[in-house]
Image 1 (cartoon, rainbow over the protein chains, first blue to last red):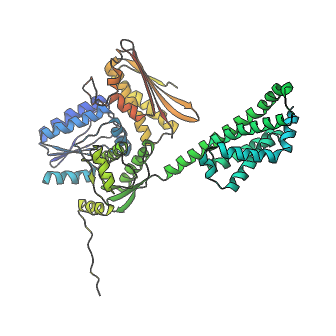
Image 2: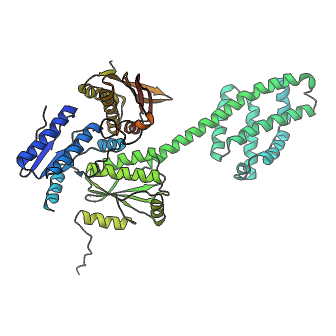
Image 3: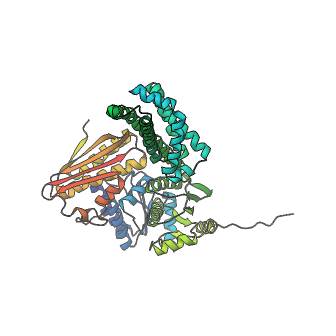
Length: 118
Length: 277
Length: 131
C-alpha cells in the first residue's frame, strides 16, 4: 500500500493514516523524493496524528527523508506527534534534533510559510 | 510455669514498668526518647508493658488488634524499631532477674523457664515487628500516592501559553508522570509555548537536568516550544559546575521574564491602557 | 490464546507488535505505556529479524507481589551478542541503524534481563508493570 502525497501550491502534504511497516516506510521515502523532484516543491508537511507508535527504524527512515529533502531544497515540518509517541522516542534516545514540528496540520502549514518567507 | 511467669509479671507490674523505663532511658537511642515528653514516654511505655502482659490473658484476635493499634501509634510517634526490639529484650531481662531474685526460678527449673518464656516472647516479637513493618510500608505507600497527587498540573495562562510549576524533588518515577501531564496538556490546550517553572525544585543535579532536557525535547516533538524558568543563582552555578548542557533549551531567571518572552514568541505583548475619564 | 509470534520476515514484526498492543490494551495499560510496549516489541522483533534471521517473541501477562504486568520474551538461536556491555551502550549499532536498540528498550520497560551466548542465541525478558 502506498501513502498518497498531495500537492498544494509549492508544498507537499502527506497524512500518514495507518501503521507503517518497513516496506511502506521505505516506499514512502522513495515516492516523496521523486515527488519533490517532479514538482520542485519547497516545503513538505508530514502529519502523524494517527500514528500511535514509532520505533527506531521508522524514526530513522523519517530522519533520513527529512535530511534528503533538505538536500533537494525542501523544508519538512512534522505535525501531530502524539504525546505517547514523543515520550517513547525520547526514552529510546531518539531526539530528531533539527526537525521542525507543529501541533497540527494547520499550524504546520503556517510554520512552513513562515520558514519559506525567511 | 506459664502461670508462674504470668502471676509474677501481673503482681510486679508497676515495678517492672519503673525499672524498664529507667533502663530504657539509659540504653535507648537518645533521639527516640528526646522526641517526646517524659510524660508521653511513660504513658507509651506503660501501654507497651500492658500490651506484653495482655498477651497472656486475651485471645489471639484481641491481642492482634491491640498490637496493630500500638504499632500504628509508635510509628506515628516516630519510635524507631530498634527501641521496640530493645524494649522487648529489656523486658525479658527484668522479668528473668526478678524471678531469680524471688527465687521462683533457679537452677532446677531454669531450662523449663527459658523454654516457656521463649515460647511466649517469640510470637510476640514476630507480631510486633510484622505489624510495625506493615504499618510503616502502608505509611510510605500512602505518602507516595500523596506525592503523586502533588505532581505538576499544566496551567494555561494565555492563549497558546501554558505554565507548569514544579515543586519538590524529582525522581525518575515522578519525571515520567510530569512528562505525561506536560505533553497531554500541551496537546489538549494547544499550547505553543510551555514554561516549566523550577523555582520550587530544591536541587538540580545531573539526573534532574536530564529529565528536564528530555521533557523539553518531547515538547518540541509534539510541536511546541519549551522554556525553563525560575533558575535561581545557585542552580545556575550547579548546572555550569556539573557541566550540564542546557543550550538547546531557552531559559530565564523568573516566570515574569519568561511570560514576556513567550508572548513575544507568539507575537503579542502586554500594554498599559490609559484610563478614560 | 496464541501468545507467541514466530519472527521470520518483516511482516512478523508488525504481527508481534499488534499482538503486544492488544494484550497491553486488555490488561488496562494507558496510551503512553501501550506505545512503550509496542515500541519495545518492535525493537526486539526487529533485532531477531536483522541479526538472528529467525526466532520468536512471546507476550504474556505476569504477576508478582500483587502487581500485574506484561512480559515480553524474545528468543532466538542466532549468533548471539559478542560484547554484551557494548551492545547495551547508547549509540552502538552494528547494523547502521540509530543504535537506539537495546538500551532504548531497557529504558522503555521496568525490568530488563538479557542472556546471550555467542554461537548459541539470545534470550531477552522485558517486563512492564501496570501502574
